[in-house]
Length: 377
Image (cartoon, rainbow, N blue to C red; front, side, top):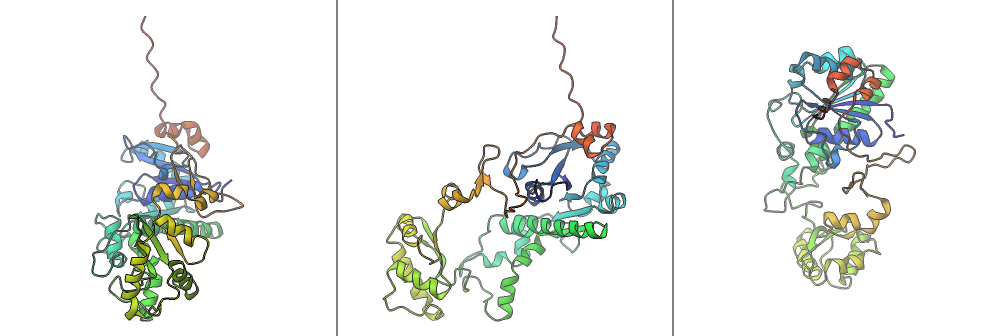
């Protein structure tokens, strides 16, 4: 039994962060049914498609199909949709219609720009959302162009995770008030919120506007990534004085005349020295030196290496629910643990009727397969 056991979720099929929300809720025990368009892609076999009860295919422009989906939503606690603003309304499954029918429903809307504002109707991707929020600007070394942090900050950090948080907050509210509500989760908003610490530092005068000049953006030589003798990389995060002292000791520099750690004028000299020394050994040699001490120095691992690292193996950080490696659910709940389950196929009529749909509604969403032709002769 997961923490969300008994919570029913309808996920209107989408890409990117919407399915990730469905994955998070399913991992935590929610019963998630994905609604795809007729002829649309099957339930994704990739990790984000895991854990659903299954998927149904339906044409929402067809009155019978729309009525069947609304019956599904009538019995749900949560609906997740990732259309552009206004599309769900045009399809007849917008929040006004759904909340009128199911007043306890949490209606979660996952978009890049949000439901209003000049850019709301425009297309975009993670890179666009985090550029508008100001976050992408800081993912750069001094004098270099920004490097997109994959699609982790906009789609998943600022998008899906904030959407899931909003859903859980709204569910708790609905349990006490009896009233559901709309959750407007925008990746621009979420990625901006992720940068709250940086804005606080800027307000105190402790963060320069240009990237590559600050404590956490490769400006500081003791918080950066260095190349080792074998062309691999070592990450260094020795910020606190006690960690920095152990870092210098590990490099064999603790007795050398060097600028003070927080002397910004001396940072170029420190960087030059660290670069030269770290280039003398391989990544794994440095990893062995620093593993026993609190210097905040670790090897930069590849995807495959990360899955085999002893710490990740000991914690079961990666799992294989369908035979493919993928990250385990997080965070960990010890009373009601989350579980990564296989990606499911089509939902059958029996499950839909157990959900509460009438047989004729279930037949619209899960039509029986055509009978096999009789053998000749």
